[in-house]
Image 1 (cartoon, protein in one colour):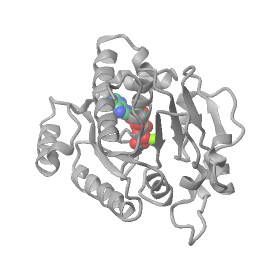
Image 2: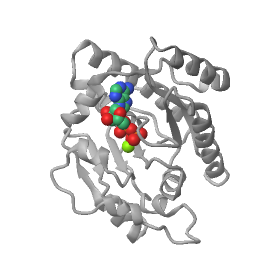
Image 3: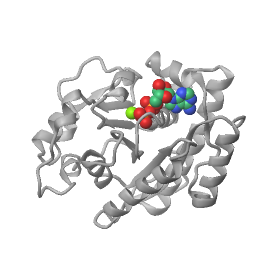
Length: 261
Ligand SMILES: Nc1ncnc2c1ncn2[C@@H]1O[C@H](COP(=O)(O)OP(=O)(O)O)[C@@H](O)[C@H]1O
Ligand SMILES: [Mg+2]
């Protein structure tokens, strides 16, 4: 699943890591592929050793080569990472290659129940490569003036890729950093609900300092047992349920451990 948004700072990386932590807590084998040159997810996942990055993988482009760039994260057994680096910013994926380059490098990847792709804060080439390699796309937005427009543009970018990646489904729109006491936020939430209805993940993710604290400490939020830590973890767990539900219902994914099938 790709996690995307029109702009930066809305919570893509926090969402990616929050879902990775939720999946890990359930014992799912999880891989995070960091496609953002800012490499924030890489830093928080705190790998002890990185030899090859997503930049090397895309430069190489050979079928299945991504597997060689997978390293264990510092979060423990069961969460792995393909790291990013600044140089990814200048990675021009060759013309005519379409957006399938990343997907080709992921061929044969099988040891994971969930693969999450964190994307750069734009809907450009890297994000299109991520979407082309994905079965699901999760849009993240903030309850701001441009939320509606930003979500719309992200959905349009998904639609463009769906023309040739028929497996791609919209997992939903997650609204992040909501402060229910803000009348502006309540207004924007209502606006989003009117436009997108069931596509919105419920409840929205509130603005909570524990999200920054857990990232700063390079730990999963699920380890933070304070009331805000538990509140955020519970919401993320609900999001994971929804994502896995869509994957199982519509997608080609195999049944998860503990599932009835
Ligand atoms: N719900 C939230 N509450 C408080 N801080 C948040 C929340 N979501 C994200 N942040 C903080 O906002 C900043 C940007 O979030 P990040 O996930 O890095 O966004 P993006 O990946 O879209 O650029 C980070 O410092 C992060 O810790
Ligand atoms: Mg980010």
